Image 1 (spheres, rainbow, N blue to C red):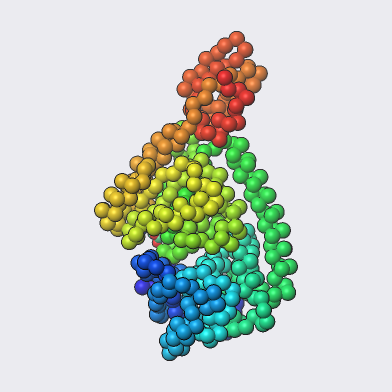
Image 2 (cartoon, rainbow, N blue to C red):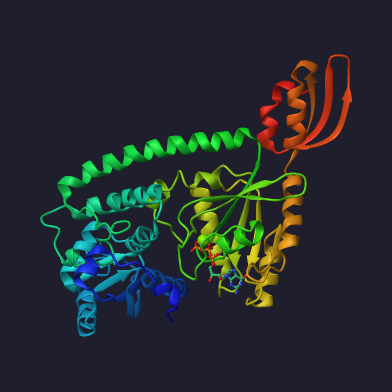
Length: 431
Ligand SMILES: Nc1nc2c(ncn2[C@@H]2O[C@H](COP(=O)(O)OP(=O)(O)OP(=O)(O)O)[C@@H](O)[C@H]2O)c(=O)[nH]1
Ligand SMILES: [Mg+2]
């Protein structure tokens, strides 16, 4: 089930030096009561994530544990039993879909005699390998170190961590700092650099806001086709790949729309329970989302259970306070999706539209729908602009749709349709 896209990735310095082979991974998903199906779905996705991170999942198991063990998560006995299985398979790393506490991770490592990581570590590792911009790298490294710091407590960093697998690679070619004494200093330094970057970003975003341009952000599960759709909408050349998290940095493009151009941004894909360390670190990147006027939520209609993706995306949107922004659902990959699934999605989510970003079908309809939705959320305001502020009149013609304009003794009187954010800027002139 590997696809060529998933295997391609840069070798880290450690790997190049030591010519390390791909790690063999054993996957475990634990559920507490009746959600066995969830646990199995979770394993399928974990398997993709592990492959994307560059390891080979060779076997997996779903465990039911009504009570979780604080020391070893799955209990000593069960762990010892599984350890026999993983040793026989010569497994390098055991990957849990569930979150493990630092203590559980340490204890399990002793029982399994190999690396034990959780889903968060895998996602952080993928982000580290995919980060290319300076800001992206700083953000990922900060998230990694915050995650790693409590895990290095106690004596010795133990284990095979020096071998260079999931959880040891920093962004780009770097190796993650694992010396406890130096981590705190590094974290402070990264935080400082990122504060500076977010200040610059905030200024840029503010100036875009002031320009009053309409901003739409593409959001969606990883691999849903956001970048492909951005390209189809704007003739851009954003990187698209059949792999998870190929886009990490926000890209902003201009899209021609009737009346005026919109700014459209594409950004990091979401995934079920995106690690909070990452959401925190990527807050400034995600500002493109939380500050948008409209969200275009892209879902992969060919996924076996796209509703799960939609729910996961909504959850992240709430985490970044973007859940109240108007949304349009684009059911993508209609060329390879089951028509019943498409119908179901369209019926349960409004406004929505089916399309294929690669085939280009539905793109024009999507644009009309976007215009319609943007309009329905716009406010019509009545303004009185003194003649000596006439510059504002021409500005209003650019920012919105002027419905009526008349001249009074000392004012120009306008009825104009504006997006709520822009309307707020002109409250002083409202009647
Ligand atoms: N069949 C089909 N495949 C598509 C369509 N749109 C995108 N894809 C494929 O889906 C894969 C992912 O597309 P991307 O545009 O990179 O997805 P993304 O949402 O930007 O993914 P990340 O940035 O990794 O989160 C690529 O292999 C695309 O060619 C479509 O309409 N139909
Ligand atoms: Mg992308």
